[in-house]
Length: 133
Image (cartoon, rainbow, N blue to C red; front, side, top):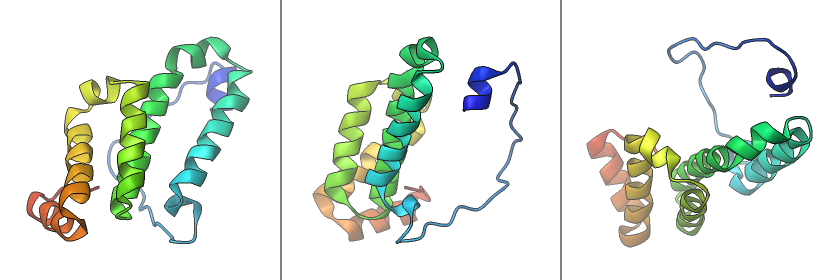
């Protein structure tokens, strides 16, 4: 992020799945609270370098990050955390809902099924739809 903000370099992506992501129950990837804290530290640190950029993009970026963390909490069957993170996401920005409605609505539906019907119902829903949390 620092390189992108402080140089004229351009970054480009490569289409397709190029890596696998392994979640370790004892690692950072499984701790949504630690992930959010690390993300917030990064934003605070880099906001000093590019305040205009973060003033313009931080709320939407935070909404996307919170939605991602909600999906992690859903995978962990952490109902309260998932609903809380989704609520925070929507409070930051509705842009992820408009830009990625399928992913956003799947996340909302999964959180609601988890909350209202429990983990087993969520597993059944995900298996039937082929959706990923």
